[in-house]
Image (tube, rainbow, N blue to C red):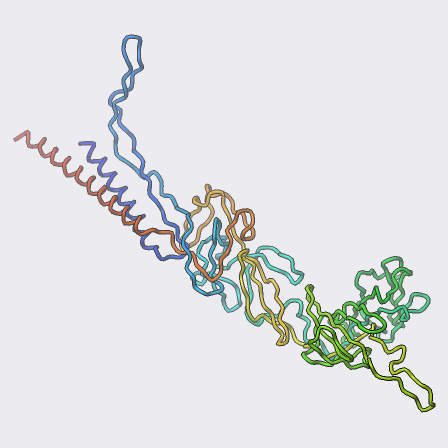
Length: 481
């Protein structure tokens, strides 16, 4: 039987395969993140009719005489070029700009995708809505440090981790701030009845010991509410301390939060206090529980006024103006002229009190930046704070074209893809992230239609070879007639 028949048959079969690939490309022209494939052909084995001969001193060499036996599929390559962007306006629609893949957990299996049309389920978990696969990322703790790779979860109304202890019972006597040496006895001791029976008492930057305290240490006697300091750790106006303890009345079930973190004040006109939580808008602040100060939006507070400013560390600075400033001297009942402001009527340096917003900040909105960091905006109805929630993980491969397509827009590792290198977007050559956008398919219809024409003509040509070979065989059979 003629070899051309079988060579043409191989051409027909493999052009059909190429047509299958083209059809798959065109069918996925609107699939987000889809990567087109390309078919490459290779020659099949050849039958050697005569081998090649080497040259001699009297005669030149001759080439081999071979007849090809058709063609085969050389490779079907995935073309991993960047697709165009499609703006959607949805915050959880994400596009990778550059090399890399989103990492998802699909029924316990780690899979990778370029399709970033994500959403959140009823638990707030960031997922692929078509399959329920969970998007992986680095969690972000309350201490503002990046944790391990895990599921990403957040939803509107989530409580800011740092505010998890709210609301604070109004009866809590949670802190005492010392800032004046007069608060201490000559033996470097401080005694306060509010500390009697206190539990888990701590002081910022100091270590509690049971014996005589050395530098950086203190001891505490809960029976008498007595704190003993080392001689070089005596609090002062320039070096205040903050005491934290559990209110004995709560049975030791919760740690009372710090309200006043530090104090730095002068003794005559202006003073400042750093607090963790701001007063309610327009609230009256009492200095030493005696002097009422009212809010002003002026940069410089006047007589009996205070201003408040947010600090970069998340705290707030309250600045007090003078009290009783400008009041003239007066004559008392005994006829003695008195100053309007007694010598000890100065800006308080030991304690303040005010009504603050006693509820936690809750998530009201979020955004995703180019490095994949999800930043939440939290509000308690008075002020807003921002905090990082998580960072979306991105995987890169030594040979991303070697990944195995498993359907659902997912890829898995293969023997030739290399291991996944998982990290943050934009780091170590990984792709950056564009939110509110999706990556479109990289299928080019003009290229696919051109390949389709070439494939069709190749198929037709191979079919003609079979027709002509059949005609030749028919002529051979007719020799017998």
